[in-house]
Structure formats: structure tokens, C-alpha cells
Image 1: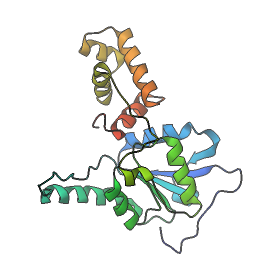
Image 2: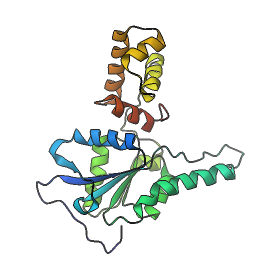
Image 3: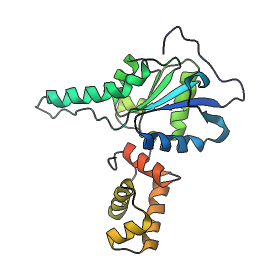
Length: 222
């Protein structure tokens, strides 16, 4: 966002109008479903001219982690930077402030350097994300404390049982309850029980939302 671009702040009583960005349609769909839980406080917009703020999910771009006594492989580091640069490329032409969902502090620094006004950990819940969107829509710059600390202390860890882990991995592949039951050798009723348990633990309203939340928390890969 250009420093000279005026903010379009919501009027009193008006919902915060959010434009979702990202290369993964599944992730965008899940974010939309999560934001919908906030009711009339938010409205999703397809066009920048109608939005107050943008929300960009960079996707599962993992920064290389150095091993004690060893250097990070140069090719791995280069590939990681290229992935992140591609994910952040949508910020270049924006005329509204943007919050970016990402994994760690180096990614947050890269996002802010490319014009992001907010950086929030990808595992953050929708309330935390909405707070960041409100802040940047008001002209503030926000960096999630969890990114600096490397962990969000306020966010409970998600513990899936071994069976639930198997089920969520099949959900990623689009399996129905019947196919899950057949693959795992359990009844369809038991499969449905496990799926509902996963939705509850992840705070998800749909199977698609559960898959994306699980991916954002590092429980599965999409």
C-alpha cells in the first residue's frame, strides 16, 4: 500500500469489508468460513475498491531451519525465498492496507518490507486475525507477538489421537465418511464420530475448514 493512499475506514456500525488474497482456493474458502462466524461485523469483498483491508494467506511456505553446527543449504534457502516472494507479490499493487498470515518472524519481516501493514501467525484464531484487521484499517501497523516469540502462548495446542490423525489425513484427500470407514476398517458411524471430534478440537464448522486449520497448525500437509 502506498504511503500516500488514503485509508477507507469503516463508518460507525459498518462492517469491516475484507478482500481475501492467496493462491490456494481451499485456504481462501476456509478463511471465508471462519470470518463468517463473526456475523455482521465483517463483509467479504471481491473488489479492492469496495474493501477496507486485505487479508493474504501466504500458504505453507516454510523457512529453512538451521541445524546447530551446520549452515542452511543455499539452494533450500533460495527456493524458500522464491516461494515467499511469489506469495507476497500480490501486495505490490494494493491500495488498501493488508494483513498477512505467515509462519515465522523472518517471513513477517519480508512481508512488512514489501508493504504489509500487519503480520499474524497462520495458526492464529479468527478473533486474533480480526483484531489485526481492525488495527490496520485504523492506520496502525501490527506484528503478532507470537511471531516474535516463536509460539502463541494464548493458543491451546491441538492434540489429535493416532486415529484422528489418520482420519484428518484422509479428509485432506477428500474422503467421505464411507470411504474413511472402508480404508480404516471401521464402521461409518465410527468414522463420523472421529470427523466430528476433529471438527470440535479444531474449532471448525466444516470439513474443508478443518483441513485448512489442520494445515495451518502443521498437523497435515495440503
